[in-house]
Image (spheres, each protein chain N blue to C red):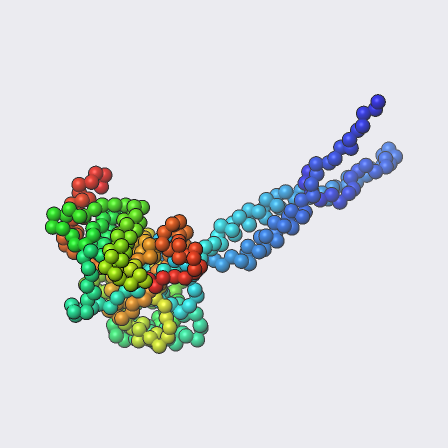
Length: 194
Length: 224
């Protein structure tokens, strides 16, 4: 079999009867286990090697502005608020939250992209109609991100990532209000399987 | 007609070159492997499409796990910067009256991880640094009533303020948002507004705005 063959073997001449010949041991070594061992170790090192180096996502938070005059005003028509709740639930509404919650919608992280894209297109069209400079059209939309206390860090990063993916230039992480908390609680209570 | 006899070839293969290849590969992987430094917290980071790689730079790394324990690492690349770390821990020691001795300060300089409330710090630090990972530390409190991280960051700003120091935030997928918020609040009260969140890379979804930008201009990132 797979081995080192260093020749030899006992196909030599027959000596006379009674002459005992020392049995020549073969120097053939079966290398297969050595190969096995080698590849086993390789596999181990491949798996332990830190393959993908992590990357970093920049996040810049605004200064806490106490002076209401300096606070950023957001036009109602160009605001989209995203709310994150427990169990990876996500909600959104456009503009102001209606008292009866009629514009409060539930969605999933998968469909959120579509929501953001639609809103972005709508706001850009609106800006174009108002005669805004074409380069600043994408700066009109402001996305307000409000995770509640049951949302996870992953949810937050996912939504922030969604901002990068969809080219949202202006967004902010804001504390959730009581009315919104209530709206989430009501929706979550109503949906089965919680 | 005598049939042509094919010489019977041996099925023996010489495995020696195979062994050589295996061991060359093995040597390569041993050399190329950089083992992960042991970390006090087990964290699975979320994914993002960000293209900037994690660089080895001077950094304050704030990590928090799914249980909401917050740890602070001070990573200074150069060895001679140990004085800065000493300055940092001494500042906190004096301000908060921790009562750390010279030996404990030295331990921090060599192993710059903080993972306990100020009240527990002396008890943890009096043990050998090699045992720090084994004790279950409570983490630095970041809730709004008692945000000790803000105090650490205040001291860090004074000690490392002159240096370009990055603030890295490494959170676990399942960490609760309030913990993240507590960390951000601690940084914001100290006028630190730029952070780098450590994430795992993932691909950009096809057809999105960013996908178009990447296709058109290569690595141009929008300012976000």
